[in-house]
Image 1 (spheres, rainbow, N blue to C red):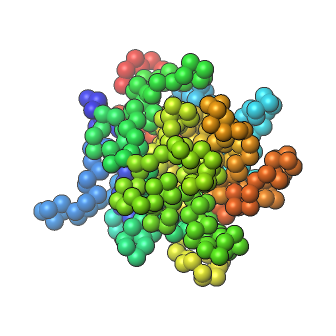
Image 2 (cartoon, helix red, strand yellow; image 1 turned 60 degrees about the horizontal axis):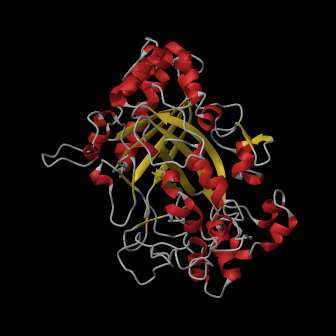
Image 3 (cartoon, rainbow, N blue to C red; image 1 turned 45 degrees about the vertical axis):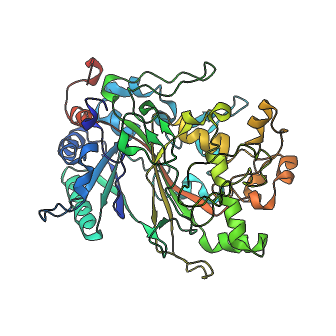
Length: 465
């Protein structure tokens, strides 16, 4: 473990495990002095990685306290310290944000929403946060074991923000869902949070069967996984960025009733159709190893190149192909810290008109290589994974389909895919039941860097933090 590990903010390497979270989105209103004064106080409340146990009640009866992680966007960082713009510009996806420009495969200029599938109902003009015209400068992640503790903490953060002239753009609440066995689930009913990588050098982050990934895939300033020479080199982070992590937040609305109606249309056994769409049974058992109770992570798809056991379009196969020698997936991992929002709608119940979904929240060292690669190159590429397997002589190139969880429906897919590709996608490999309704890219600096950012000394003169 690095000597300065205590400077890492909580929720990056070790998650905030409380059942209740809130995300507070702030605007500085272009007031640098007010923003710095606010951050000076907020930095003292930020939870370090070594403080996460304080979310539990102490044996002496001391009550649990809420936990806080502070993320700052590109606009928020450069308003605090304009000189850091040069440090951030090389981290292109972060610098330009989830609304920014990108290059498509032909080298033409397009937008991140177009490449990531945020079209139609998920168009940024309809987002509740992070959309055009309302830039977010700071994102607070607050967690607690009880809703009352969380409510008090959020009210305190809102008061502090208002006292320094900041605007609260949105407070988004999230609450864990649990099935009858007490296991965490997401709104479609599947066991959630199963496949998380461990972090090398941080032994208590490692779970049975999970890959152990170099810390530099999640924290800046640390060695990462070995990268093929054909990959674009990652920018060297400035000293003040050490022990920080890029944060991707996405507010995803789920159509639960529509999902199960679709599964019923695919099979007389809708639970089986849903398992094939996800790649796991509702209880988390993988289709790749259905008889292995208790061990939900130790499996691969080798020997199933044609997808007869786990369809090649299934969600977990699309976003986690589990074969680094072929897919180089160790360099595309993320630390996911999401939580559902909204009340539960059970299978078979009619749509009640209430909004529900997942608050996707993940940490990584490079947004292009990790989140955007998985979303663009794997989940919503109808030729993946066959396109990669074919280079090893293990499959013919062809159409596998779209991720049924993250991908679009047939109508939306038809607006961007050639007709011959669209015709090759099986009905089970279309989605349309998860819609993006907000997105923010932030950077969660180290505790020490938060204090520096709140001050007036120039950060570009630092040689170490």
